[in-house]
Length: 428
Image (cartoon, rainbow, N blue to C red; front, side, top):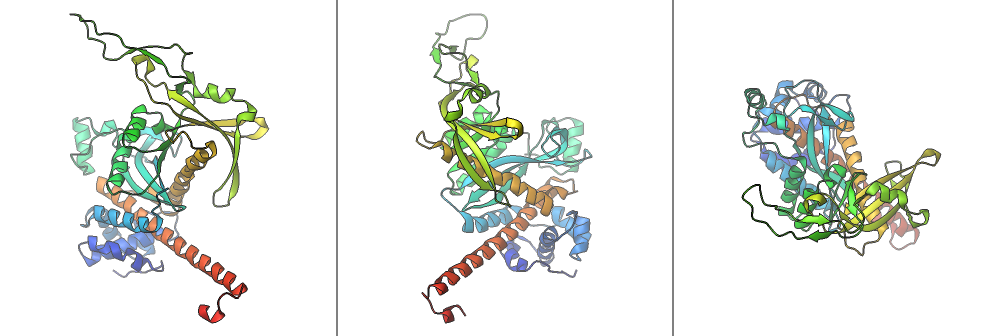
């Protein structure tokens, strides 16, 4: 097998991972695979990639399912490498999920479920991911596939599908927010520095997810839906004494008497805010550095999830963003946050917009590196392809950081020369 290296420095970049492959052939295949992901090409599946890097197609297929290598060790080393240049006490974790549309039913964990790629319920796989943002750099930290309930029924058809895709017996259905907490706990166990956790409304509208984050001492800014209800004042709870009865079950929760007005939807609050109450912020984001003008307001509220059953929640920030559209119309977005009560509204806005990196990162992972081009069907193959795509992303990130450092050094040297601070020969 002859290797064609088309990515400068990729061998040096891949060197820390090579100890996790049992033989030379596996190491060469891994480097070829990463190079194939980095090279130009419409498809980044095994067949076209193997042709581009002049490697064995069968060998690259076996890399995903047959060759013995330590995925955990590779992932851990990748995370350590990236944290070495991006670790930041003011860093954030971005939690989200991404979909992989599929046509057949045989690929691991494929099912009819909401597919963000198509914007509707469709046949797809879903990966729950966590992205790290530190020092102005965002990179994928980890991703795990979501196991739908249809893949955990225990009937004969389900058992056969699991066997064909070689799913571990220990893997069972768990809600996406539970998977997200597991990913976060793994990072917390490694003491990855961060200040906050961000997620969209699918996660933010789940009170158990917010409670678990708060129980861990995590600060968060989480999107919520427009029909989410809140109290503007704390509800009064009547503690009802348990009455012994031979029939029926005793009441387990308190009965709530709402002495304030009924809970109100956050959409109604947003529409009622006076024009002079909005604070304005211009954020420059995107590859073209286009300005995004946002108006925002924040107030303390009490989430009303489960209030009829006696559930009571601590007060949080309700952050409302307003973006002006064409013809005088505007769009409102809503967020819950347990950030300190002293934090200014515009600081909340700046932090919430770190989620921009989610869309930007997925676009690069899918459009440029072929994250969603995997055509295999096995559990192991899916996770190995995702991991190798992360390595390709890490290579590009390291290249950009090196180029940025060189550019900054060049600008600094030019500034020193212009002022005669240092002699030119020091820079020869």
